[in-house]
Image 1 (cartoon, rainbow, N blue to C red):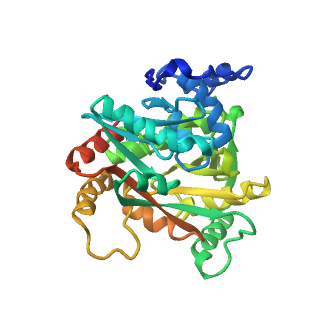
Image 2 (image 1 turned 90 degrees about the vertical axis):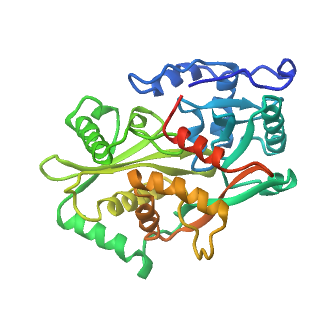
Length: 363
């Protein structure tokens, strides 16, 4: 985790009060071989705010390695961002007390201007009037997909594909299991890594980052990983979920499968995960935002959308986001727009290139 001492008038900030064992838990959640996290005041305070106020599909990603943190002056809210080519791109919405969100946004914008950086607010779902009041330009970049777990059984015509996949998995005697620490040195764990490595080789690209998950999250004690296994002990595929603490739900992170796995294996894994979470009392799942997915009912594309489309084509070549978009439409879900906000009068080409570098984990 890269960090910077970036609070405005930081000397007036109240010091964070660390919960017992918090920093020890941070160390446990790190994947072996991952970059060491330097615990600064910003990071320590963010670990307190995230469980209380993190509610979107990107919230848990804010503390991943490679992000920079900005702490609102009073210490009641923070946001994560990456900086490339003089462009500071936030990762989703600010996280913190509702009364401090507007100040966090304004202070970050002013901080960037002082540094002669271009502030860009990326994948924004909430508090839209604040950005409008700042007279920032905007356009829709994606749609986040949510499933309401209350009374969810994937019934009706819209749930047909999901039910078909679950019925086939039952006929083929596939079992659904949760990955836990007991599997950490087992054949199951080795197979999860094998599936991921094979998936990456097929893409001919290292794992991307920013809003996209990485295999090392399966080491994280806070992340849920579920897998499908046949009667011979062969793991066919797996999914992982990030906690959305304040929303009483989970957000889809990784979807990985063997090339010869049963057709519909992902539908089976997601539906089984949903019903498992439902039985525990959780009320909402996010299937995540297929980054730069096409906007429903899209008509003539603006110049802005054409530029974003070029980034989409780049990512789609490796990750198949168009197919991912169509896949998520199979579930009985609610679609919520995500926006990109940036200062009016600044061109998009530099922003697009900075986004590419962010996804490539470029330092």
